[in-house]
Length: 348
Ligand SMILES: NC(=O)C1=CN([C@@H]2O[C@H](COP(=O)(O)OP(=O)(O)OC[C@H]3O[C@@H](n4cnc5c(N)ncnc54)[C@H](O)[C@@H]3O)[C@@H](O)[C@H]2O)C=CC1
Ligand SMILES: CC(=O)[C@](C)(O)C(=O)O
Ligand SMILES: [Mg+2]
Ligand SMILES: [Mg+2]
Image (tube, rainbow, N blue to C red):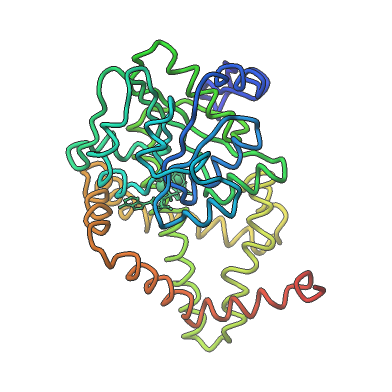
């Protein structure tokens, strides 16, 4: 394992150089991998494995069956019902939605043979077992590889050669081969490197991150700034440009490239002075919200909300409506018009 110094803390990382794709193929050569759930992650991970020369079958219900067929999975050969796929496999990648994993568990647990590996991309089902009832038998491996990105990017980064990083963990090692299997599948699904975690650490950090900076907080602070500009007489295009477009088209790219101070040092002295002065005020204003969020994650309130929502047969429809409200808001309609004006889009 490579030892990498992360800001003064030395951590282990598995790189592609030490666990090569050839090694992953060797480890997996006698395994049959079933991806159960052809959603955003299931699709990205199974297509990458197939392209990497790994034997993979898909288990899916009516929801994304046609998508799997379109992607070249053949009913009765490489595409089955979730139950049938799980029965045929030695490594079962359980990639139904987290609520779906709970619902299907009574069926799924009867499909598992001694020596199988049950694989997750999230610690949800295992860590919140009191809520989900997902308690695997003792004679199988229970492993995790969690790509740190959308399943859509798991696929597009693979196709453009950039890869994605993932965390990995072993919860239960029944065969003595759990770690080797984990790393092999991690590389096979297209991870550029893998860093160790536990199921618990993964789920706590993931639920916090997506509710926080990555999605919830991001959308919230953008709305707040857009609204203040609009209330003070700025046009939608000006408010959107100053809140979102400049971030995604310019400044966040500099952060991605070389860090926050790099972005700051490529902005004006005026901007730097003000941003440095306001940064701590924003940090301190949201800190209590982040404390409340972490608490809500650890106590299981967040996962319970997700599971309760999943029980509602009309939930998908309701979720779609909520996203439509966002889509149809002035801010994001202004955004669509701004995006259409990007020079590279107008050329097409
Ligand atoms: N979406 C993402 O990019 C990421 C997802 N994950 C994790 O990967 C796993 C899969 O997530 P997604 O791909 O987002 O899932 P998803 O929400 O797209 O659902 C995947 C599939 O589950 C099936 N499904 C949903 N509810 C079901 C039910 N009640 N019974 C039977 N099947 C049902 C559907 O057929 C769907 O195709 C989850 O554990 C998630 O937390 C991890 C990293 C990122
Ligand atoms: C993409 C990802 O890793 C998330 C945001 O945690 C998720 O989709 O659950
Ligand atoms: Mg995540
Ligand atoms: Mg997540």
